Image 1 (tube, rainbow, N blue to C red):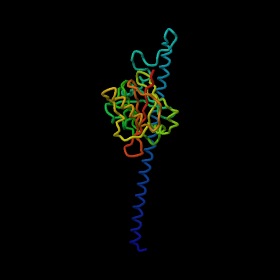
Image 2: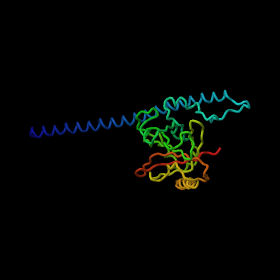
Image 3: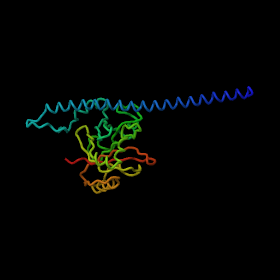
Length: 267
């Protein structure tokens, strides 16, 4: 091979090696960032769970010390309307905390925050720091005290399994039937919710409606979201019912959303 052609070949080999090295370094960076973000998310919310559980123990001890004269424990929900002891440490970390959500047989066990819009916590964790997983947050239009007809919670559908990814399990009828009750507790009271509808929908379907002009409009909304479910459930919905909605992304098509609706269990 002539020296000139050999030099050209060596030059292109060096360029190719540099390109491959750059691709390798970029891919390694992306993989590391993905793994680090997953670890960071798990670590952050493991800390929150530990703090929450410790506060629950303290709250239980306090409750037992304040037993009523009849020997019956005071109710978990504060009769005075005050904030439950379990949240006070979390509120010192972030005053935007409005409750806690748990879904059985999933990793969904998170504090819930609320901002003045539905964008702030898309890429911020409970500390307010940047995080691709964001936080579980309540729709800014929902009542922060857990009142109102419709409470909506959002969470990312993370590939590493965190946040609201495991809502996917409700697509299976067996899981739907066996894990029918979820918890969303406000700062002021414990609340149990019965799942009655699960479906994938377009973003233009009005499943996040919060304002209703009449009882009739609300009943029509309840029937609409119940009838849309991929699994049928024999449940009567009434105008007095309070609804909890869990919403996350889904990937059946562009802008798809997986939605889980639950009715607050009547006391």
